[in-house]
Image 1: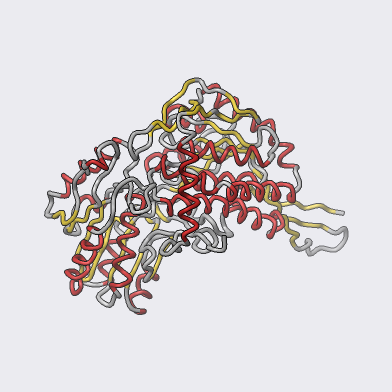
Image 2: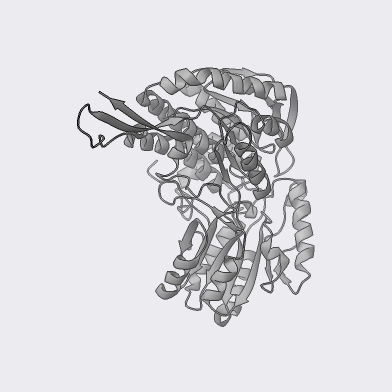
Length: 521
């Protein structure tokens, strides 16, 4: 297929894409209800228990998934520890080959994987296909980066002394057993990306997927298993955060950890990883309270679609989702009216159906939080303009559907400081770009941000905004839509523990530690 699928190319896909997705969806529906096991030490094994996985679309039982007990998490870590010496010594070329083989298998299965993502997460077909392809690109891209940089083994200058020659090198080496804890919203890509990086750099991996989305990580495990990695190099455990996740993060033989999820959990994991006998690396991506600045000079034909796509894509359940708009008073009435009108036109329903753009939220707890926030938006001087209710019509009766919501609020409203992770957009009027940027920077989080305006407004925004990933005048998404090696994706402040970006040339060294070598002849 010549069409290159990314999150910013979803406006006019070829008809073949829809036909192939529909065929894969029909095949996946025939697989519903099956049992899915763990993957430990090169084998698929039973868990300590089983849990039913329900689709947020309509409550359909997607399958039964093994739950790893603490002992099995320990077995996974011990298997990874035992496999580490041989895997670390495996030639760079072989690690690169295996990583690219995983990418090829994901691409061969991309429509099947996307169909599962749509059913399990509740995202539309384009978002689902984008995530599957992004995961393949992570395995390819990190492999190529590692080869391009020669495995980060570099000669340094010899000592400037007479006599015997001192040869100096800087070598980056893997840590050991690396844990990956992934979220529900991008269960494949945010499991696959860190796993690809850890494996190609010579670490072994234990992956724990989100409780709500075990099928996605099982499909990733299938691709890694089928690619031919040695036993123990990659291991999959599924279960709850308080069960399998706690056992993984608390294990003394865990050498490093990548976590994607809430700020509170990420900070706790960072503290845990630096305690103990010595500090261990923790790469934590911890969400955002993302803002968009709309200057009086903004082109609203770009701003309106960019705002709506970023606020309500994946039902607002992206760490990069837009939740705050600060708009100059001169154009506020027009922007608010146009954003509201575009939001009312959104189709909400079963996301596997081509006509529906927005699907459900992930579970009952998300619905409860949404209704609570809707009540809060009726106070403190704010006013709901669109949404603020659960959808209960015939098409929505058995799923977790809520209406995309827009509220205008004073800049001091408490929800401007709360990461809701739901389809709720708050808009505030400000005097100018300087005030808008200052309000945007008030958040403790700093993942993504957007700006629509003229060159002087943009220059001020880029100079002063405190966020790791920023977009300017982008109709495809005001704060969302990063693609590996096109847009590096990183968080500042409370949104990230390292300040280094996913899908960029700064990412891989985080999975390695430097050794300085001096050898005197």
